[in-house]
Length: 146
Image (cartoon, rainbow, N blue to C red; front, side):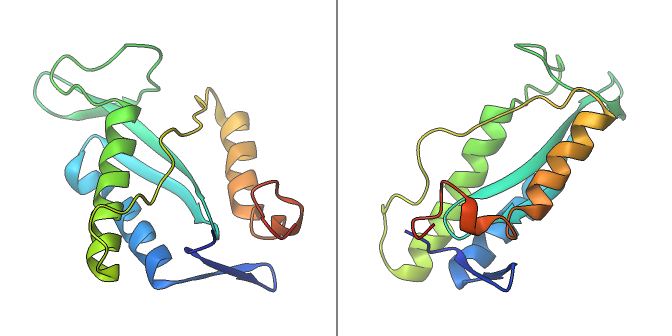
């Protein structure tokens, strides 16, 4: 089901539901101050995004970017990618269900795909993949019409 919008001439046109998803993504740092949202792309039936989780010092200051590996977290702020994604999905679903008048309706699949970006080159290629996704929609395995 493609409820988030449609691709028109290689560009994503967000539906009201897609606008909610994008808004909830942008609001992640308001709930998780040690996160930064990076490149993001809503697609007709899924979304791609980069989240940076930064570490806090004992004084509560954000240090340089820190890519979490395994169970490594800041001792003061137990932020994990799983918690961030769960919160994002919960907030999006809640707002979408209020708008549609269908409380309790499932919006997202249970799982998600993750990838740790380890260097600038990897970041560049992931960012390009996300940004070019609408142009590649016709060939995408997630495209029900492709």
